[in-house]
Length: 573
Image (cartoon, rainbow, N blue to C red; front, side):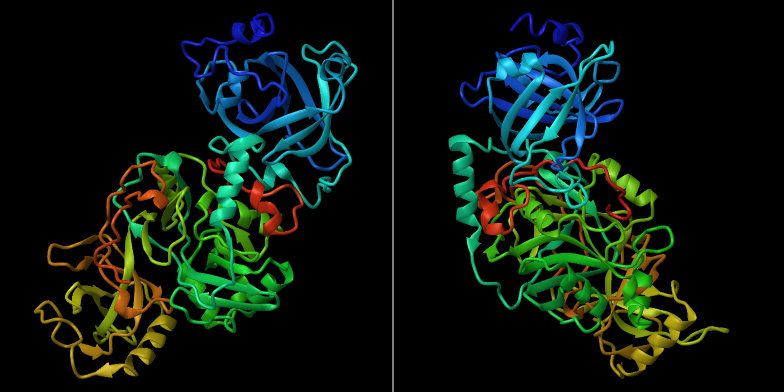
């Protein structure tokens, strides 16, 4: 083993690199394999097989393919210690192999012939039993022409797991880390499978389901590995209930918008997804690819709902199972498998995870003009209420306000001068929160005055205050406006407010002032009594490749729990 690791050790300075120098327990009859996704000079996949006390290693630039026609180049590199199977982290700059490393897959490998003879002969055939890699494979050495490192090929053998590349790309569809998961073979995997089967109970879908809501927080969590971060989409929250051909699209308040979203219903029907409750957000992108709330409203007003894109990020019920007690990372993995490989411009898309520190993600989102970022605890269950397990990190101050009145326009302006805004307090009264007089166009002004006049009332809906302009018109407090602003004044009013649009998906009675909470750091599972951040006080109320159903996937679905997919944070693809 010492001789086998001579080259490995000579290339590394172990006082600098976090990689292990040696060690690791041999697997005996259950030899282990690991595939590490490695962002070095170029992204590649390090494929390692345990044999004779070390890990025989190949660098596979494109990663594995389930298509038997794909013969993937695999460059034979130096042996690594068995302890390298546990390595996930960043190799520092100027060190050999500098860059980020994640454990993309792990499991056991089972030679189909004498492994030592096959390795020496350059024709190694074996079966893989991993989280992502399954079935029979072959490593075949090519005839070299003076290369410093031997060129081999990694090839999928014909078996029940074969899938054409046009239909399935394992590296694209399952891009994430499996480090924290148990080995898929042995007692640990059986226990994990039993645990998942225990919590993912077979159940009928409820007719109604309220979504989980996020809590505004004051700063990113200090334990980011325990969180999944996604784009905060500037749109409407929509739950899709799919039962055979019966598809309903429901807002967060339980309103049925199926008729309004007929093109989206048709797109979901065409996908033939498993029965379930799917959770996501509908948006419309502007010409730069950013979600634009104003354009979303115009899509409804102008009946241009074909421009709507539906980003899915959760599935609390799926394929006959109640997944609400299943950890988020596994729910998302099952959702991704149910969606399969989607066309690039699909109306329905998967909300991918953002890859970077939360501080970098928020900074990038703000620079690109996005609303912010959503963080979710990887191990959290799904609960139909506002939760500290889901958090909002906003680029600027922005929230909903109740419209309690308006002022007359001045000069050449038509419709209204400004909207009088309010939020409900703990006392149940509507408290004045300032006014907004910018962000309107002519069409918006006409539409607003038409709706407001129908709600005219002679009495102020606000709690007693001297801050409101004398010449004001009062309305029944039923309309909700989305407003961005620079800050709150000491008196509780917004400053430099800009109208973004009306929120028809939110109830006026539930609108209060959002106050950021602080995220509590912990590694304890929510099912075991973990404390989460308190809700904002003023706000009211996996699988083997090709597996056909969730039932058959459950024992192998404990997969991706540390995703690091590099994506476009605007489009989510």
